[in-house]
Length: 134
Image (cartoon, rainbow, N blue to C red):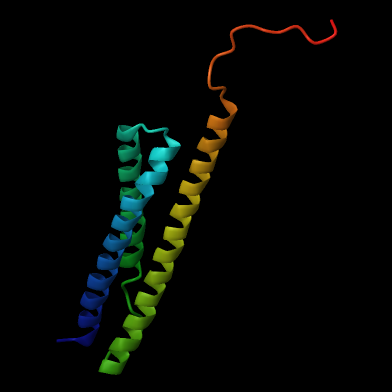
């Protein structure tokens, strides 16, 4: 069997496995932030979380498949490991950047929600008071 094909199979298995693991971790832990931002609306939090996960899968698996092709022919075990290390290293970096991007967006959403809640009075105003000294 051609070692290039072996490299492709190993690369796809590891890359897609890592993508699934990161997406599940983001989904499980990111839901808390989304629920906080959406003031306890659980249905909406679940829907937004699911949409973020789908987008994460599409972007990362799309990148993994686009990055599959190898310009260098793999003829030895050493070539196989070198090609896999470069490809998997790039995939890990992209997953890390995507993860940090998701955390940044979720944190930004959470902060905005906290600020909006702080600006809303706890009860509606019931009247007005004349200024002192009038």
